[in-house]
Image (cartoon, rainbow, N blue to C red; front, top):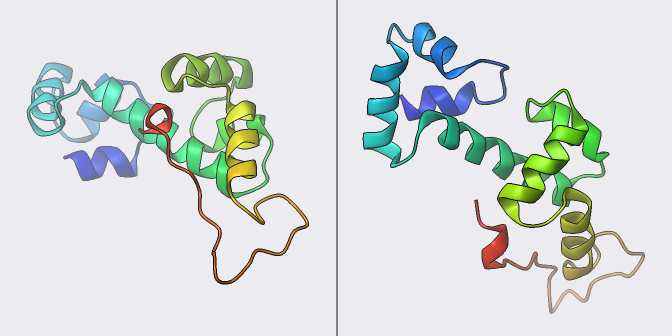
Length: 127
């Protein structure tokens, strides 16, 4: 069930619509997801969406609005507020910090092959 939800996480579906796609009631889906993931379906889906948004923000050069659309949010302002509230840092700020933390990420500098580029992991950025 979690795999199916993860696959469909970026579709604009409510929890009830996700449940109906799998022949369940919303209450049954909540119980299954809570048992398997320890979270509500809404929080589980949100975690997947925000995790993918972090990857896109750090990994490729898309506008924040384009990232928002790719992870299922039509309103970039809402996405920005939600991301900031849940992740603890604004999407643009995350990109700035992670870009500087990854040598060669968004700079002209050629990284030293003896010390390959890495993306710093901080507790506040964990999904």
